[in-house]
Image (cartoon, rainbow over all chains, first blue to last red; front, side):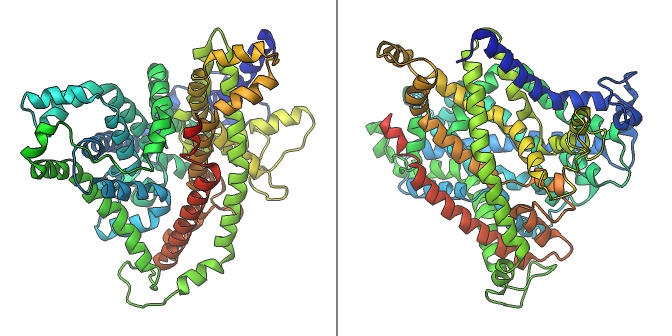
Length: 272
Length: 321
């Protein structure tokens, strides 16, 4: 196999290739259109155009600031709601004895067979008949009931040490008390891992927000980004500044929570 | 951890009662608790998953343009329409080609990256982060970079600029299906976005292989490199590989974002979801035909998933470990 130097060389080449798109975003976001589209390729902008940032938020054709705000609100509420609803259900399925629990669990598992993306037509039909098109509840509520997340929580709670809860139950706490006072405080790592993954997938979601966000007022940041691709007039510097702004929060999350996020993925991602 | 959980998926939830003393005090009490805990989720699941699927099946037998409360029953006409529609059946072919390329290529690349990173002694965390970082990007953002800067059809695109140094003429990456360069663009964007994620799964699995296995192999005279890789590493990664392939296929079914954004105006390279999007929400707003397409797609996916499970021995491979 490769010697040590060869190994590092090969890894570094791959790493450089993986970084090219990030480099392109930053280069383009801080250049003028002339520099981006010029005949002579420029590796760096001649002068760094920080003004592109303010221009992006002043641009009236795409309500970019508004879409960022929508994405933040949707992302946070989607994450909190999913955690609450799915963790409770996962705990009930894992721990509370009930005669038909296994049948109900099967009913949840069956929904995993049908990828959420395939159901966008029926879901749109339902949501539009509720009058929720272009609304916050239309963006948030249908996504809260993830069979997959419920499944992950159930598997996690099955492995949670039973003794801790039993001690609490002896002390007179019911299921509800044991859950909030014992189980949740001792599971914060797992909750945080699921929260991060849920937030990332919510922030990056495109198909559902595209289907629901028919008014510009209800666009999320991904829909706003996509609208640049069909625009008649192409302002390259604005497009790439918008891309940079849309990616930056998640890149920061990744860099700061990296080790912990990797553990979360390694533990939970494989359970599919 | 993964091995027990995947097996659990195929088993009913244990219906045991914690603590014999609790039991008498009330199955009724715990039944109520059960519904308090699971009720909100189950109600949501019924309203936002089961009802839409059922409604879709119902709508697929009606002529439903611009309306979700149709009155004209047409039987299987919508199904006929979709199955004889070259665009829809063509989209199934597009998906098959896509899956046949993206699944093995991502599998190989993410495994290769994991093997490389796993062997690094210094800066392992740094390189792992670099490969994992694209997971933070959305398909929309990545498509923008790919379409407007990396694989732009004109000279200022980076690929064409670099190729130009070697005297290669401008290539219209997305605007021309002959030759089908658009596949290169589509596959590379997804590869960049997802390889790091699966690399993490492989890394975790690699770290769980007991080092004694390699020591024993060395004593038996196996040369490090291809031999140990084939006879020790690969078999030990079997459970992870199976899970990765399954996840990759599921992700491929859902392909929409990059196709929609990279090729929206073109007639080639449309996977089923893009086709359905235009059928149901395009100019016609044909919910009947769109629903029929969604039902067909759902049935296909269920069938493939079941076959896959049988073929890959999903859930069975764990016992061998």
